[in-house]
Amino acid sequence: MSAAPSQVMISPAARDALQTWLSHARAIKAAADNTIAAYQTDVLEFIAFLTAHHGEPQGLTPLARVTTRDMRSWMAHLRQTGTGTRSVARKLSAVKNFYRWLADREGFEPTAVLLARAPKFEKKLPRPLAEDAAKAMIDTVAVQARQDWIGVRDAAVITLLYGCGLRISEALGLRGRDLPLGEALRILGKGGKERIVPVLPVARQAVAAYLKQCPFEIGPDDAVFRGVRGGPLNPRQISKVTEQARMQLGLPATATPHAMRHSFATHLLEAGGDLREIQELLGHASLSTTQAYTAVDQVHLMKVYEATHPKAKDS
Image 1 (tube, rainbow, N blue to C red):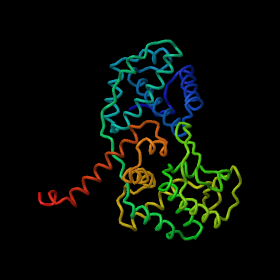
Image 2: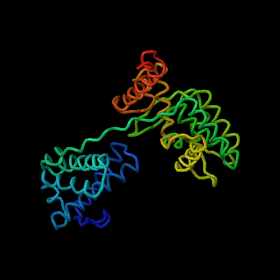
Image 3: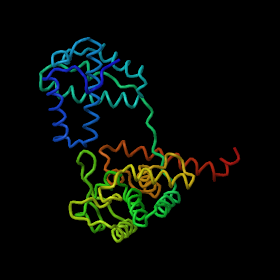
Image 4: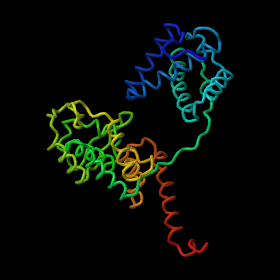
């Protein structure tokens, strides 16, 4: 059994290298705090495995001697301990990123690490809601809270997810200086990527209605969306109210806050939106990420075809 990440036997030089790399990722790549935390955990777990595998503490020299056999043993260990293929791929990506940086700094050849292949996994397609279900979700969220201002707040957040395609972290990251909302909103998304998002009148109205009822003063640097005690609203609270609403509406478990963003993209595509323009609105770094919605749209079209085409009905 491998050691816990916090108890890994690692030399001061190797630990310093890891912390320097994490600082580099935070500063240069503008990685989010949760990404940095995941990087640290994944790399330390890798080093913990090497420590147990070789029976000695891991310093810079042992780390530079990692072999193809070591990499295969590590990934076999992950699978044996029940780690899913998607998680194995994520951990391998973190280790590779660390080794690219470390090899460049220390001057060794990281081929054994970089050539390691992650197990293949089937990408899950986004599961959007139907238009009427998305609207029903917003309406239900608005009326299920015990206090009126909280219901209006929750509806405003969900409206931003569906009406503007925001990530929940982006919606909850809005500050007083962003108010009042205009026809467009400047969003700083993943990796520090900035984009301009149109704000529909319904979204502006939802946020304005919330601001009228919000009992807390909102300064330029304050979070727009507040919890019951006045602190920044926790995203778990939005997940909770969304779960309550979907259970009331009889919607599947996939009807999450993120599904509202998926619904935004899919409904735009169904209405004839350009894929690259949708990519910009979502803030996807790669078009291939956005292209998942074309598969969703094709599934939708096939269902319509099978339900309405005379030949399909007769078969």
